[in-house]
Image 1 (tube, rainbow, N blue to C red):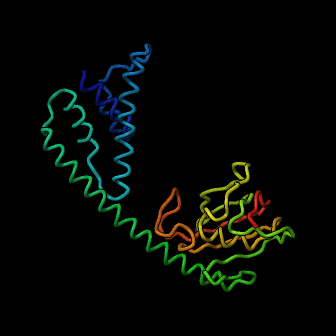
Image 2: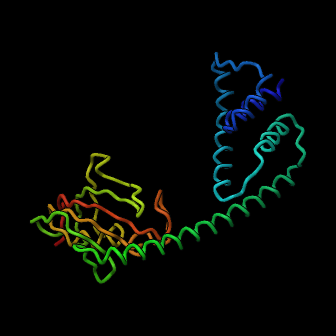
Image 3: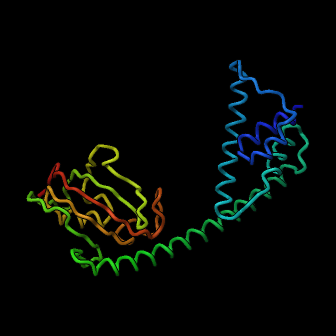
Length: 245
Protein backbone atom coordinates (compact mmCIF):
# COMPACT_ATOMS: atom_id res chain seq x y z
CA UNK A 1 0.00 0.00 0.00
CA UNK A 2 2.91 2.31 0.73
CA UNK A 3 4.22 2.02 -2.84
CA UNK A 4 0.76 2.52 -4.31
CA UNK A 5 0.19 5.66 -2.28
CA UNK A 6 3.54 7.08 -3.31
CA UNK A 7 2.87 6.30 -6.96
CA UNK A 8 -0.49 8.01 -6.76
CA UNK A 9 1.05 11.16 -5.33
CA UNK A 10 3.91 11.34 -7.79
CA UNK A 11 1.73 10.59 -10.82
CA UNK A 12 -0.70 13.31 -9.77
CA UNK A 13 2.14 15.80 -9.42
CA UNK A 14 3.62 14.88 -12.78
CA UNK A 15 0.29 15.43 -14.51
CA UNK A 16 0.11 12.18 -16.49
CA UNK A 17 -2.85 11.29 -18.68
CA UNK A 18 -6.15 10.66 -16.93
CA UNK A 19 -6.25 6.99 -17.87
CA UNK A 20 -2.78 6.41 -16.41
CA UNK A 21 -3.78 8.16 -13.21
CA UNK A 22 -6.95 6.10 -12.85
CA UNK A 23 -5.08 2.84 -13.30
CA UNK A 24 -2.39 3.78 -10.79
CA UNK A 25 -4.62 5.17 -8.06
CA UNK A 26 -7.56 2.76 -8.18
CA UNK A 27 -6.32 0.86 -5.10
CA UNK A 28 -4.83 3.87 -3.31
CA UNK A 29 -6.39 4.99 -0.04
CA UNK A 30 -8.10 8.34 0.15
CA UNK A 31 -5.62 11.13 0.82
CA UNK A 32 -6.37 12.93 4.08
CA UNK A 33 -5.03 16.39 4.73
CA UNK A 34 -6.62 17.02 8.11
CA UNK A 35 -3.52 17.74 10.16
CA UNK A 36 -0.58 20.07 9.64
CA UNK A 37 1.74 17.07 9.45
CA UNK A 38 -0.37 15.49 6.69
CA UNK A 39 -0.42 18.74 4.74
CA UNK A 40 3.35 19.11 5.11
CA UNK A 41 3.97 15.57 3.91
CA UNK A 42 1.69 16.01 0.93
CA UNK A 43 3.19 19.42 0.17
CA UNK A 44 6.70 17.94 0.11
CA UNK A 45 5.62 15.30 -2.37
CA UNK A 46 3.74 17.82 -4.50
CA UNK A 47 6.77 20.11 -4.53
CA UNK A 48 9.00 17.28 -5.74
CA UNK A 49 6.42 16.37 -8.37
CA UNK A 50 6.26 19.96 -9.64
CA UNK A 51 10.04 20.13 -9.88
CA UNK A 52 10.26 16.86 -11.80
CA UNK A 53 7.35 17.80 -14.06
CA UNK A 54 8.98 21.12 -14.97
CA UNK A 55 12.30 19.42 -15.64
CA UNK A 56 10.69 16.80 -17.87
CA UNK A 57 8.75 19.48 -19.76
CA UNK A 58 11.97 21.41 -20.36
CA UNK A 59 13.71 18.27 -21.62
CA UNK A 60 10.79 17.41 -23.88
CA UNK A 61 10.92 20.92 -25.36
CA UNK A 62 14.32 19.99 -26.83
CA UNK A 63 13.13 16.48 -27.81
CA UNK A 64 14.68 14.56 -24.93
CA UNK A 65 11.72 12.35 -24.05
CA UNK A 66 12.11 10.19 -20.96
CA UNK A 67 9.66 7.49 -19.91
CA UNK A 68 7.71 9.19 -17.11
CA UNK A 69 6.60 5.86 -15.69
CA UNK A 70 10.26 4.91 -15.18
CA UNK A 71 10.86 8.27 -13.51
CA UNK A 72 8.06 7.41 -11.08
CA UNK A 73 9.42 3.89 -10.55
CA UNK A 74 12.90 5.25 -9.82
CA UNK A 75 11.37 7.55 -7.22
CA UNK A 76 9.47 4.71 -5.57
CA UNK A 77 12.40 2.28 -5.65
CA UNK A 78 14.71 4.80 -4.03
CA UNK A 79 12.24 5.55 -1.21
CA UNK A 80 11.89 1.81 -0.53
CA UNK A 81 15.67 1.16 -0.76
CA UNK A 82 15.27 -0.96 -3.90
CA UNK A 83 17.03 1.22 -6.45
CA UNK A 84 18.34 -0.73 -9.41
CA UNK A 85 21.23 1.73 -9.88
CA UNK A 86 23.92 2.55 -7.34
CA UNK A 87 24.94 6.12 -6.57
CA UNK A 88 27.83 6.13 -9.04
CA UNK A 89 25.62 4.80 -11.84
CA UNK A 90 22.96 7.39 -11.07
CA UNK A 91 25.55 10.15 -11.26
CA UNK A 92 26.92 8.84 -14.55
CA UNK A 93 23.55 8.58 -16.30
CA UNK A 94 22.43 12.00 -15.05
CA UNK A 95 25.69 13.62 -16.15
CA UNK A 96 25.19 12.12 -19.61
CA UNK A 97 21.57 13.31 -19.62
CA UNK A 98 22.60 16.86 -18.69
CA UNK A 99 25.14 16.86 -21.52
CA UNK A 100 22.57 15.68 -24.04
CA UNK A 101 20.01 18.25 -22.94
CA UNK A 102 22.56 21.07 -23.02
CA UNK A 103 23.70 20.14 -26.53
CA UNK A 104 20.14 20.02 -27.84
CA UNK A 105 19.30 23.31 -26.13
CA UNK A 106 22.26 24.97 -27.83
CA UNK A 107 21.28 23.53 -31.21
CA UNK A 108 17.68 24.69 -30.78
CA UNK A 109 18.79 28.18 -29.69
CA UNK A 110 21.07 28.41 -32.72
CA UNK A 111 18.20 27.46 -35.04
CA UNK A 112 15.87 30.00 -33.42
CA UNK A 113 18.56 32.67 -33.62
CA UNK A 114 19.13 32.08 -37.33
CA UNK A 115 15.39 32.05 -38.04
CA UNK A 116 14.88 35.28 -36.10
CA UNK A 117 17.72 36.98 -37.93
CA UNK A 118 16.35 36.00 -41.34
CA UNK A 119 12.81 37.01 -40.42
CA UNK A 120 14.00 40.34 -39.05
CA UNK A 121 16.02 41.17 -42.14
CA UNK A 122 13.12 40.32 -44.44
CA UNK A 123 10.67 42.37 -42.37
CA UNK A 124 12.91 45.42 -42.13
CA UNK A 125 13.65 45.34 -45.85
CA UNK A 126 9.95 45.48 -46.69
CA UNK A 127 9.05 47.84 -43.85
CA UNK A 128 11.61 50.41 -45.06
CA UNK A 129 9.59 50.79 -48.27
CA UNK A 130 6.44 51.88 -46.48
CA UNK A 131 5.42 55.51 -46.63
CA UNK A 132 6.17 57.33 -43.39
CA UNK A 133 8.96 55.01 -42.28
CA UNK A 134 12.38 56.61 -41.84
CA UNK A 135 15.59 54.57 -41.69
CA UNK A 136 18.58 55.98 -39.84
CA UNK A 137 22.23 55.32 -40.66
CA UNK A 138 22.41 52.65 -37.94
CA UNK A 139 19.47 50.73 -39.41
CA UNK A 140 16.91 51.88 -36.86
CA UNK A 141 13.47 52.41 -38.41
CA UNK A 142 10.77 54.69 -37.05
CA UNK A 143 7.57 56.46 -37.92
CA UNK A 144 6.03 59.49 -36.27
CA UNK A 145 2.56 58.77 -34.89
CA UNK A 146 2.18 62.08 -33.07
CA UNK A 147 4.59 65.00 -33.17
CA UNK A 148 5.15 66.82 -29.88
CA UNK A 149 6.52 70.33 -29.44
CA UNK A 150 8.60 69.89 -26.29
CA UNK A 151 12.38 69.62 -26.00
CA UNK A 152 14.39 66.62 -27.20
CA UNK A 153 16.44 64.61 -24.68
CA UNK A 154 20.14 63.83 -24.95
CA UNK A 155 21.69 60.44 -24.35
CA UNK A 156 22.66 61.46 -20.81
CA UNK A 157 19.17 62.57 -19.81
CA UNK A 158 16.69 60.64 -17.69
CA UNK A 159 13.33 60.34 -19.44
CA UNK A 160 9.77 59.34 -18.57
CA UNK A 161 7.97 57.26 -21.18
CA UNK A 162 5.02 55.02 -21.77
CA UNK A 163 5.64 52.12 -24.15
CA UNK A 164 4.56 48.75 -25.46
CA UNK A 165 7.04 46.26 -26.88
CA UNK A 166 6.11 43.43 -29.25
CA UNK A 167 7.80 40.78 -31.34
CA UNK A 168 7.30 40.62 -35.09
CA UNK A 169 4.46 38.15 -34.66
CA UNK A 170 2.62 40.60 -32.42
CA UNK A 171 3.47 38.91 -29.12
CA UNK A 172 3.57 41.54 -26.39
CA UNK A 173 6.58 41.11 -24.10
CA UNK A 174 6.38 44.32 -22.06
CA UNK A 175 4.13 47.32 -21.55
CA UNK A 176 4.21 50.21 -19.11
CA UNK A 177 0.60 50.89 -20.12
CA UNK A 178 -0.43 47.50 -18.74
CA UNK A 179 1.29 48.33 -15.45
CA UNK A 180 -0.39 51.74 -15.47
CA UNK A 181 2.95 53.27 -14.55
CA UNK A 182 5.33 55.18 -16.84
CA UNK A 183 8.95 54.04 -17.00
CA UNK A 184 11.74 56.36 -15.90
CA UNK A 185 15.35 55.62 -16.87
CA UNK A 186 18.64 57.18 -17.97
CA UNK A 187 18.61 57.06 -21.76
CA UNK A 188 22.17 55.79 -22.04
CA UNK A 189 21.39 52.68 -19.99
CA UNK A 190 18.90 51.04 -22.33
CA UNK A 191 19.29 49.18 -25.63
CA UNK A 192 21.00 51.12 -28.41
CA UNK A 193 17.82 51.40 -30.47
CA UNK A 194 16.11 53.20 -27.60
CA UNK A 195 19.06 55.47 -26.88
CA UNK A 196 19.15 56.60 -30.49
CA UNK A 197 15.43 56.63 -31.15
CA UNK A 198 14.15 58.53 -28.12
CA UNK A 199 16.64 61.32 -28.82
CA UNK A 200 14.72 61.92 -32.05
CA UNK A 201 11.52 62.61 -30.13
CA UNK A 202 10.21 65.87 -28.76
CA UNK A 203 8.41 65.63 -25.44
CA UNK A 204 4.76 64.93 -26.23
CA UNK A 205 5.59 62.80 -29.27
CA UNK A 206 4.54 59.24 -30.03
CA UNK A 207 6.82 57.19 -32.26
CA UNK A 208 6.81 53.63 -33.47
CA UNK A 209 10.26 52.05 -33.57
CA UNK A 210 11.39 48.98 -35.49
CA UNK A 211 14.66 47.93 -33.88
CA UNK A 212 17.04 45.47 -35.57
CA UNK A 213 18.53 42.76 -33.37
CA UNK A 214 21.98 44.37 -33.29
CA UNK A 215 20.42 47.52 -31.80
CA UNK A 216 18.32 45.48 -29.34
CA UNK A 217 19.49 42.41 -27.41
CA UNK A 218 21.54 40.78 -30.16
CA UNK A 219 22.26 37.12 -29.47
CA UNK A 220 21.00 37.36 -25.90
CA UNK A 221 17.63 35.96 -24.86
CA UNK A 222 15.48 37.51 -22.16
CA UNK A 223 11.96 36.42 -21.28
CA UNK A 224 9.87 36.12 -24.44
CA UNK A 225 12.63 37.75 -26.48
CA UNK A 226 14.79 35.09 -28.13
CA UNK A 227 18.19 35.59 -29.72
CA UNK A 228 18.44 37.96 -32.71
CA UNK A 229 14.86 39.18 -32.38
CA UNK A 230 13.78 42.34 -34.19
CA UNK A 231 11.63 44.37 -31.78
CA UNK A 232 8.76 46.78 -32.31
CA UNK A 233 8.04 49.53 -29.77
CA UNK A 234 5.28 52.09 -29.48
CA UNK A 235 6.81 54.88 -27.40
CA UNK A 236 5.29 58.03 -25.92
CA UNK A 237 7.78 60.55 -24.52
CA UNK A 238 6.09 62.07 -21.49
CA UNK A 239 8.92 64.17 -20.16
CA UNK A 240 12.56 64.69 -19.31
CA UNK A 241 13.07 64.03 -15.61
CA UNK A 242 16.62 65.35 -15.38
CA UNK A 243 19.02 66.73 -17.93
CA UNK A 244 22.78 67.08 -18.26
CA UNK A 245 22.62 69.55 -21.10
